[in-house]
Image (cartoon, rainbow, N blue to C red; front, side):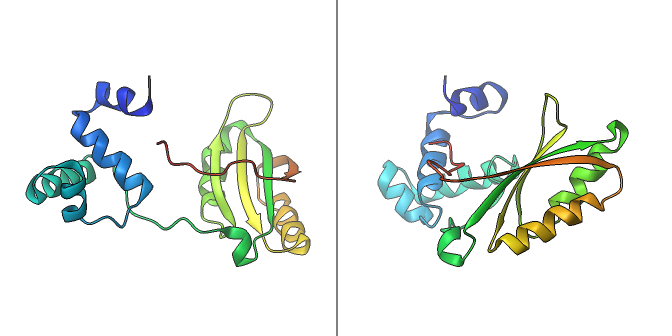
Amino acid sequence: MNVFSVCAKYMDLDKTDERILKNLMVDARLSARQLALRLGMSTVTILSRIKKLEKEKIIKGYTTIVDHEKLGYNLTAIIEIIAKKDKIVDIEAELSKMENVCGVYDITGNTDTLVIAKFKSRGELSEFVKGLASIQNIENTITHLVLNTAKEDFRLT
């Protein structure tokens, strides 16, 4: 069972919606006209379906996938955070606003939160981690440095 089958159970998605989503996840710059030609449908139908997917917040926005290393972000850190139990949501909200942070996950296990962040230098990473220690209600952090990235693509296609 793929992600679209699961979504179809909860939303009013059909195979056409799935095809539209798959195409947009590969290339969000496709116009409705291009999609219509590719899928053998009218442009009006494609536009109304996209508007419905946006209204239902299945499509939350459109973005560009960049090569972070080519922009100088050569370090990826995965940081585990242990927080005071009643402050996890507040801490995650604060972490989510930080510039270098790409992902904040509320997780199960021995730690409470997992943060994925990217940095241009060890000094920048060091400053970030030391700054975490100053955030009220963070009890401990465990920082992992990524050596190699085998895959980094959050599109489910």
